[in-house]
Image (spheres, rainbow, N blue to C red):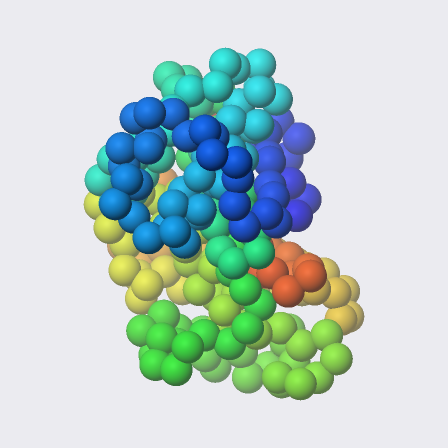
Amino acid sequence: MIESLLPAYVSCAATREESVPDGTLFPEEEALVARSVPKRRNDFATARACARRAMGRLGLEPVAVLHGKRGMPQWPEGIVGSLTHCDGYRAAALAREADVLSLGVDAEPHAPLPEGVGELVVRRSERERFAGPPGGEAGEVGAIHWDRLLFSAKESVFKTWYPLTLTELDFDEADLTFHRDGDGAALGTFTARLLRTDPALPPVLDGKWRVEDGIVATAVLLRPDWRDS
């Protein structure tokens, strides 16, 4: 699913398994989740199993994937990437720095956001866009839970932003517009206008989204030559 949102030079791996066999983690990774609850451990382990499959497809030897500030994955030298996990879906996307400056992927269950969360995530301008096309009210055939899609898309934006700036971007500091590919299609594109800019990134980021089998997935990719476009 994630692979359909990214170009072929990005190595993707995903699973719908909720857990992986014991021994999947490197000792350094085991130490990071030694005291974690089972769900946290499963999310951590399955995402890293995906990461190592993606490494293999790039011709890399499998290595431990530790994390730094705000949980940012620490990749091998010359590699950029992103991890995501939710109930029913885990994925990793990796690429070489020569091809990709930064990328972010996210997956979420395709369901409305919990009560109160939308107020923290959705800007007024975005809410007004949801009232018209592209969209559909909840319950309609082909309808999309746009609040959840927006949350996922902003997560992908922030995962792209953070490695380049090492600063946090609030949910209300990106204004997103969604486009749907054809009538009733559960996939499309989006643009994210950054309301807090940084010279490391353009003021607008482009992404793709898809809803399939109860999962909404989003991806943002920034190429090294973005200043030339």
